[in-house]
Length: 55
Image (cartoon, rainbow, N blue to C red; front, side):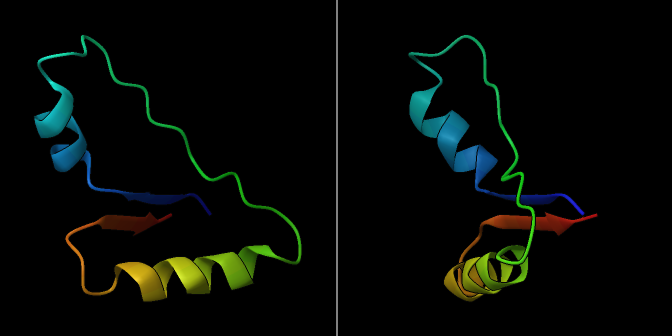
């Protein structure tokens, strides 16, 4: 499962005058701590416009 946590539009809007190319990485979570980290991420972004995609 890949998880994407970011507000791409905000990143691009605030940097577009200085950046020509964007590269976004994944969290690449593995092992026993993955579930705990995903729960923390979900809690932190639940009231935000941040994109969270799990596949």
